[in-house]
Image 1: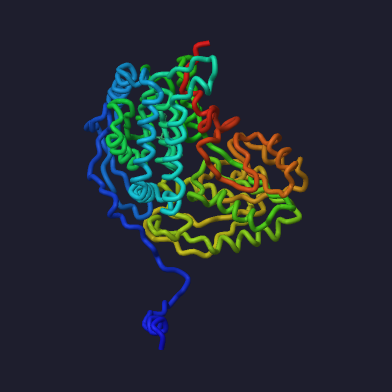
Image 2: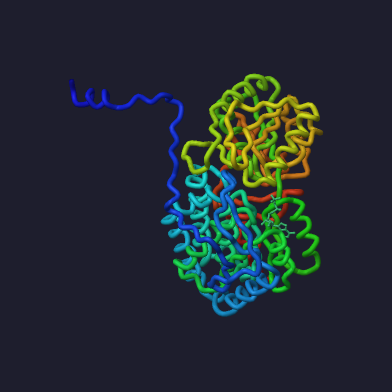
Length: 491
Ligand code: ADP
């Protein structure tokens, strides 16, 4: 018997070849019991506090601060002092060094950040590891490169920083949204008060330690945790020069009303109801992958998710069949296991919203399909869902669900696809699947969406501007365009 045969003889034969869990270790994350507010480079005891949990099993992870209006005021004052005491007048090449350092530390501590992101937010570790954290680092690298080239980016316009930026971010990409907000603001010489979403504060709090390691001067970045009341206090603070908000359209509208006439600069990145449009000449299997990535990535908690699938009528049947088959292979489960494709729903509140809209879809007459899958008993979970037989007027075709729920509609001609795709109050993103280059260009021109992906979906890059039309907001993040909201020009 050869050596290899002997080894094989001894190896146990698995009972079931389909699945073996591969949990990522939690040990890399050292959680504190309590976190304060990060103001002026120090941890400040909050006036009030609340508990943050893991949505996958409802375990309490830590107690964090609920910043009051007074706390926000202290943070804004710290940001103002840091702005005036050197940060805004630092040469761009010096600011860039800090941003490069932050980017490198994010890479060095990527495993720790990815585990914490999945623990607190519920997204699969393979997404936080392969998407959120690397992209967050890439944003800092990218904007570090601009810090000393602003004069070239905007020739003859004498760019200068705006002042103190108030930044409010959502819970779907906590660390990545932090990077989208902080990197351009700091590159342009602003100082910041940032408020993470109430359900996902932990990676932002760990990021404060990254700032300490990078030796960023105190007060340049201040992080205040809390719910909408903290956000509202930041919006209303007279010492803030610019608000950057990513979140729901309703809150965005309220912020815009609040800021009207104040002279504060504002960018809003709000909801979406993207059309993913599949023509009959596309590569079908590739399109199915794109559809799955478009709506089930991050449990569908993506403002640019491809939540409305428009399929050319001639291929609707085979495509839906392929899609349903593919759904059967999606694994839903523990976010810290490296296998699952779909993790936990971020909060009870969000789960209830998804359930309500799905019930409305069934009531209105759409046909529901969910693949057989066993959901964990504890925590917040929802199976990947497809609705067929959907009419344009149904709530599931009009309203943002922000969950793993796809509505399938059909069309016959490109004109009809455009008309239906644009029939929404939103305009953040869209996808087009076809072999024809000229059709891609024509569609991209017709679609009222800030981003149009061709033969791909949910692809992000720091060099590429991202933002909406209509009720999806205004202003761009990413790329050269993403610098502009953080600059004032002497013209
Ligand atoms: P969602 O409904 O998806 O949770 P929200 O728009 O409510 O989205 O939340 C996005 C961010 O806005 C969060 O950080 C949240 O705390 C904050 N927020 C909520 N209400 C307000 C408000 N009135 N003013 C400022 N920020 C708010």
